[in-house]
Image (cartoon, rainbow, N blue to C red; front, side, top):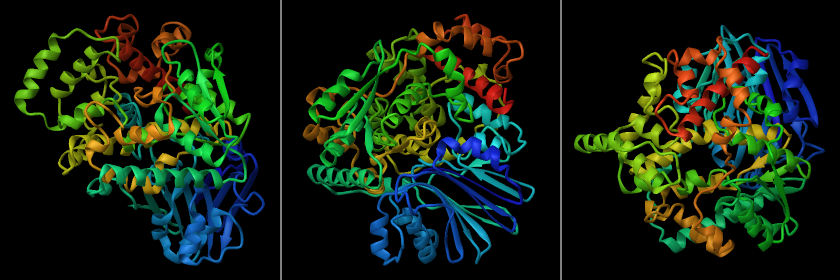
Length: 613
């Protein structure tokens, strides 16, 4: 069940305020549990075992509040002979935890953020799923511990200060790194982690219970046909479980790509009246025609949501404020609109999240499959540096020239700058215009150097880093908030347990073959999808950001970031904002738009979420 949870030790929650902040995550039922110095609060969006899944749920000395779904919970019951009274996956978790403790997490296929109060130990156990689909933030200071599903809910309970070091990370990276948040003393429980917190002495003891890195270190000997067969079977099980773990109708988001196309194709085999949804808008990014080909092939009940963005100036502040943190990814906007439209028809939706990170779908992976740019030699760096300095700036990100331009940029760098240039690439090359202390990337650089020294190939390093960083820090945050803003549950079959623990072990050439990305998934798509889709480049809910900044949102953005007292000016050199706005900084239009959007998102967060303006 898609829900909102919160709790505290040695702190009295403002329940009316919390109810208001988490209502959209669970409008069907709200309940609060209190014992000694502990409070637990739950908002429920009823999807599975609607009659008997009330929370907080109790079993002997255990009490749980839970956000998410365990899709294989019936299998877990059979495996451990668990005697449950309801059909609720929440009860399965309680019984499994009572029998196995934290080890029960290894068996769960699903998305989850949970808190279990154990009276026998007088402690709380909190945990998150492998990929980090379900969020959980916590505040700890001076014997007080408070947690919640969303940052805005925590901010409205507590008087917290801004963590400017983490804001500096956001400016450079485009997202908050792992446990970082924009607030002091507030952390996000990392993906694949759990923690115990004593009610006597509320200190967070963190444990990493799952790490994809260990699965990259495994080496599968399966030939391509065996790998295809296994992937197909796993995906069928994942889709089927995500359809059946619901007492409500389940639909599917459908873009022009193969990830959502495959999910939709397989889902239609188990639901011959499947509802599908895509967004359509004018311009080069329109993916609706390709999505329609899949919808027609599988006779889905298809909804093409035409977005005109006529009222974007009236809604953009609300959309960005939902995140509770500065949120850089502008594709949050179409995600918000398609979620709103889907909610009018149903409450549960499948998506293709995770396919690119697991199967190798990004164009930037191609060079890393051929060469480990994290370890460029000195001579290579010098030559690439000279070439890059001579090359004119590019404005067409899809051109071959841009590809070569980016390659020379990568080859002249090493380690963390290589990663930042090949991914978000907002302030890279213009870092001198940022204001920061020298230590703001220390932890990040230490982690990246550890990855660089590992035995993984260049491609594996990139994919591992994306799974650990951009997926939980950006993409899954985007979809969770966009769907939950409308009380809609999003489910991601491509992030199922068995794929996460099998696909990383496959050889690199099953993922990238020549210049073809996502090779094994494209081979699988030949069985299910129209030929026109199979060799298309990666597509997603993209938006015409450059056009918005120069037209629809121009006046609003200017009023935010160019005002004399703009908060974002604390993080850039004097005059940079104005020079960037007036195109006096030598950079491409795409990069300029990214930097301006980074600053705008920061300013909206500061005014609307922190100052509550």
